[in-house]
Image (cartoon, rainbow, N blue to C red):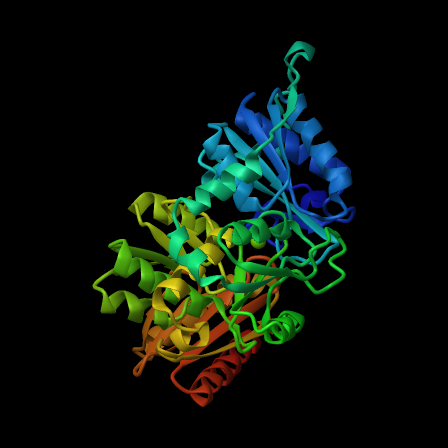
Amino acid sequence: MHAEVDITSDNRLFGTNGIRGVVNQTLTPDVALKIAESIGTFFDEGEIIIGYDSRTSNTMLVKIISSGLAATGCNIHVGGLAPTPCIQHTARNRRLDGGVMITASHNPPQFNGIKVLGSDGVEISRQEEAEIEETFCTSKLNHVDWQKIGKKDMLSDAHEEYKKAIKRHIDCEIVERKRFRVVVDPVNGVGGLITPNLLKELGCQVTTINADIDGRFPSRPPEPRPENLQELSTIVKARQADLGVAFDGDADRAIFVDEKGEVQWGDRTFALIEEFLLETEQVKKIVTPISSSQIITDVAEKHGAEVILTKVGSTAVSHTMKKTKAKLGGEENGGVFYGPHQPVRDGAMTTALLLNVMARTQKKLSDVIKALPQYFLEKDTIKCPTELKSLILKKLTDEVRNENLTFDTIDGVKIRYPNASSILIRPSGTEPLYRFYAEAKTKDRASKLVRDYRRKLSKLMHA
Ligand code: MG
């Protein structure tokens, strides 16, 4: 592939979640235009929604990408500044042929990116991505006759329709009765555009922090990791709120803070939603990546439901849900996919579902979480040159096989030990490193697994 499009380290346009790059370094105006023309060629003069997050570079990229789509004969319907799940919902609701969401999700402000959506709002499959990559590389662009250049219109009411769609899946009455106090931290992004109003309509007393739209993300990094959510914790405690919610940059992921100000990682809140839906909606299948906690399996087994494991990445979860007709999916990073609404991760839907859980159980969030099985998670990384990644994975898998350990290779290698401890070792899709996710019933055991496998990997790399 041409050197200038080296947007991901493995020389593909698309990474784990769409196309990402540093604006004006890898994601330059000319690269963005050609990507848009390739996407437009793929959609074959279709009807396309375009949405974007709060990043400063969108003043430039929205125009460039719209031009590329119009040049290839696509009609553009502007969904505007909105959360990714709102644009996804609108693509399907308005029966469009597809969509383009301009966002780099949780990445720092110098990044931007492109998520390509199918007619059902789900990000396109790997095979379809390959088609766009092929068009990009061969430059076989569908530059249409001047009379066929795409038209543009503005979509109104998309926010309202999306909000209404979420409320249809919630027992609004029992939530309204509770008059929950909720603090929302949308990290100066699009998450502040809809959820605060949705929550007010659900009877909540809402406080927002970091709600001004500002694409530099001055308040905190856009990834809702515990170390970035101290302000939210403090305000939840000060306001004596029942719940705090933090979004990532495009509001498809939601991480929650309980009434004590404790950040609860996505596995736990997903397990609560899972348990609630297993009890109330006879959900039979749960789709989750191999990196998820054992809690998800424990809860499913208790209710006789099946867990379907996928590769890491939201697109794998969405497509597996579609294929298996599963109603629910979830990721450890705060992504919850509620199929009856849409099989994509959706921060506002997740927040509404969690409030429904809290209203139904009549308990504080920290208490319902305490009742879940307790596991300790340790994460770490080790540097590994991209060109060595697959060789190291093969060596590691051979070693694990020779030791007669229980393992699977859905994504990287996950080794399971007795007493529900496990470690997943997988090469990063975007960076020159390996990631470790160890889980066990004690912190010591999880840390030891990480230490042991760090040593093993380092030895394999230097052998
Ligand atoms: Mg995101």
